[in-house]
Image (cartoon, rainbow, N blue to C red; front, side, top):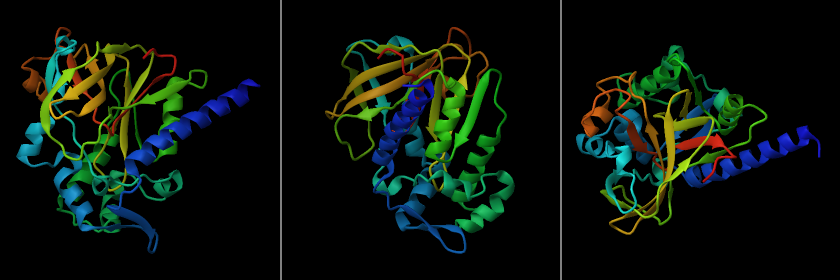
Length: 295
């Protein structure tokens, strides 16, 4: 088989694998439907409006905000048998934004300069929580990357795959990892999770983390940083019997971090080389690594 054919086959496999993950996450969502009405327009149900108002861009109530910070921990906490309080958000089908194809996503402007048009397109008033959420997401996606950082916002499966390919290069095979709930859980609760196995370090020469953003359709903020990080796979058992195969990352050097970052408040620490910040990934966030990485 020629090298070009092998590369094409690899990309097809990666695309199919990631597509399955997204279908699992997003299929069945009736929160919003993309339809043509004088161009692309969003039809929304009551559930989707509640989701945007209450959750988009961190616009949570005080109780939810207090719970959401329970993803941070110290590296020394990663020990077999140790208990860590964690809040894994669980989103029902009606709370998940739809994933668009590249053709659909490219037909909709994605720029702060087009925000008035976008608000009209999605029928949001300019002073609404939804408008603030969209403005924050667009602004975040337009920030210039930091020193040694590669960043991009993906509005479709195809654009995410293409951008990840640019990071890893055509000669480096790569794969995607996620946090998986091994037992169905329908509600989000804060509870203690016990580490069931020795945490496994995943070594990769390059890594791209993709986080869900607040927007009417699925948008991922992805970034790759040339910094000292450790990626872990951790098997957890909750007090309610929920088993989670979780992905976690530790940022070993936080010298350049904002001292007001919520992680330092939670961990009672300050930025520095001796102050790592670790956190778990929610189930709908993705981590790309070289496929030669040991699990």
